[in-house]
Length: 244
Image (cartoon, rainbow, N blue to C red; front, side, top):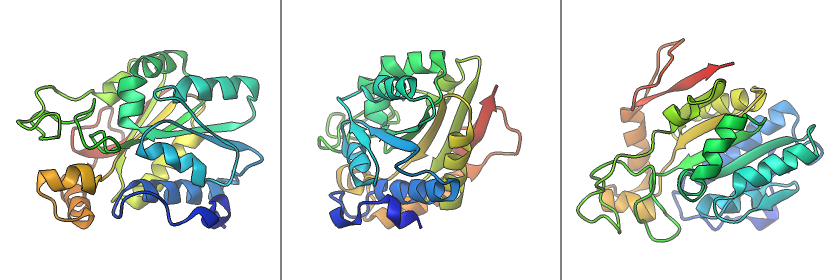
């Protein structure tokens, strides 16, 4: 039962009501239960930020790393114990900004890691300032007139490697989210799942959303399934692209 993979005695979580991270955690636990992963054969590595707390709610040994250092720590764990399934769960800021250089080289080295990126397009923990995945013209605490830069293209970054696995999904599309996590865990190399998630308190309200429910309905309206066999995902498409 997937609840056995969670430290329920620590619930309720510290995340804001309506935050998408809890759903990512639940879907991850459900997939792990289906695949027979637990404290004997799996570990979760997380970084600084709202998403970093997720590892502390999983009923297994985990590592809460320094900011931006999730990937080198995860690689070290995998090197020491190759039989262990190593899953990284962290935010877009931790992975693509502070840890961006580590991400580049993880793609190049192609270690057998599964990475779940909680992509809420903002630095939520520190008040809602612009991050590496914040879309151009988006108003944040640090860009009240709109972000002047284009976001990091995580898909193209993953596809820079000779072998790659990149999945795009959202917290709304829960069946698809579980499928992406399951496929990523099965991939024999570096697998990256880019999960669009809602941060209602420090991002969504500034964009005009009144609730997390409204943000989820926006995901439903905006994101569509990519055609089967697609080699590239459009900006508003969900799916999996892989090579190797």
